[in-house]
Length: 166
Image (tube, rainbow, N blue to C red):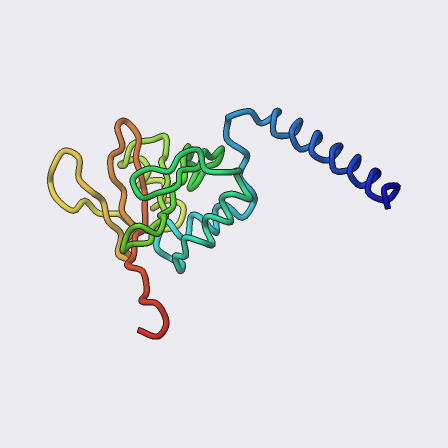
């Protein structure tokens, strides 16, 4: 029995070393986005798909590794990605502490430029909700673009469905 377990243990040690080396190459930076990033995350941000935070957390962990922070009722993931031709730096998803389920992204551009990029790429308009200097912009399906310091944040938030049997 010892003969069988020793080679297995050695192979696990080698696999663990290979994983550690691979993770070391990525450092603390963001991982490159998978080819499905635009359709999956972009559709969710525009409120064009069902929001399921467990699904999105699994997707983001697989795509970018573990979240780098858990704050404000959300898990935050570093992302090396772009949506609608605009660089995305962070993706956030709701945890289960709120009555809302949401998906959001921080983009490295202003809300005006993000709205223009979305409209040019997929035809969805985000109109200002008021005449203030920093208005929230909202689309017909319900996604919102807000100022986030010198960047912008786009998100879709919906109320969680009631649990079955209620």
